[in-house]
Length: 239
Figure 1 (tube, rainbow, N blue to C red):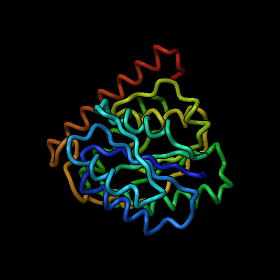
Figure 2: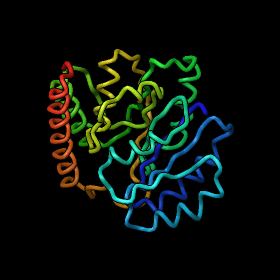
Figure 3: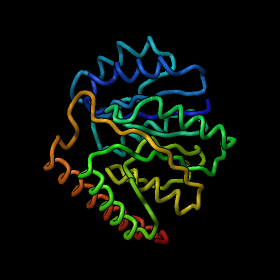
Figure 4: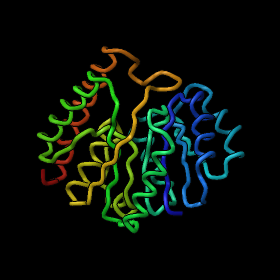
């Protein structure tokens, strides 16, 4: 298995069929597996997965009975992944399965170099969200002493060896920051590529919608990121 892509699903019963159908229409080899993590959903996601997964041999699921955080769900999927390269993307369809194939092609062109950290770069986003992202990028870059831009962009891909080197990654919204920072700290070759970032297709975002939701999410990210820095300092990580 060359690549495993983890998709954390929290109350994504409407998007799960779309995700599976889109992957089914583009996957042409058996080198890619899809792991849908039911991250403590309270809707009918579990029933939808049980009904649909037998039809899609490239996909399987990992059940997290109680939601313990965004990062926790991804982490459980990564632990179960069989691929030489691992990664994740969101279930809201703001990025698409075709972005996974772009990642596969880039890694293939680079001879599956295990020193590569591959990360999307969001394009075509509303101006206000771009401004918020820039602010968060500046905050996190100053905090960690590394250039960390557009941290929330998807997908992310890296070798299983890199993943196995992680020590107690955060289980909250600082998960993306931790992975990106560790790649920088380990002097990995960072490759970014453009993705078209769309609006959520179905369902409701965790923090809701509109400006209040953006501010709420940003506040949570600032707190999570600051706590991550304190955690790394306690472990004696060089910042």
